[in-house]
Image (tube, rainbow, N blue to C red; front, top):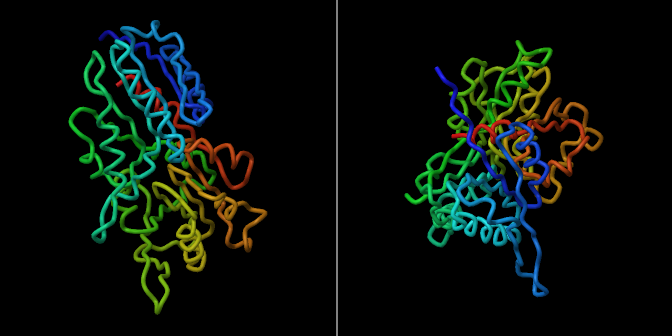
Length: 319
């Protein structure tokens, strides 16, 4: 059976994502990097220029985005909306981290579900000559958010869990690993991809005026427990899970999250030299490079290790 010919993809990227874009391009000769001049007018608004725009006519085009803050979203949206109109064959938006994913519901009248707002904006991306835009997102906070997108785009939801599985197989104590979830939501999200591991499910329960973490099911005694979740912000829940797992006899505790958001440098809470006590340390803390600013900040800081999405993104661009 003849092998399918790989499509040639022209990959544009925002400034923050340059390092990841280069890693993606290194994965395949079928991916060529293209550039945009990211400039600003004196009033601060974007003054953008897509370099060599004529060269991409009739070509497959992708854009690697990083919506790390509201301040950078507008300039990237401007480029994203412009690219499909350059008579290209197809357009793919790669947005590894969907930043408003955890704001997906209303708990009381007046709440604004900004996940829905962001999905509506992206659903308005113009069609290319090849049809609707494909949007590649990794480990979106809630799978039902696929229904927030309109019919004029094709959301493709990928996961970083295969990278974690590859890493766990390389551990010297790989046969002693147990997976822990910080809550039922994380269990529902990931347990089917990790079913061959023993599992622990934690839960937050109210004790007086406080909410504390307890083990709902499973036994960590003597095990290397790896806490798995989609993202981390302040890290408070992970730390509380680590404490209770250690108190119940875990040999050591590690963590994996696809998206290391870590606002206000909250990653510093996990750095070994700053940990409160040695028994509160994480043996390993794995994140992907979905949040480029975090990747730069935690470089060479134990216990962090970055598992790159580059290979997975390169594969997704061939779908």
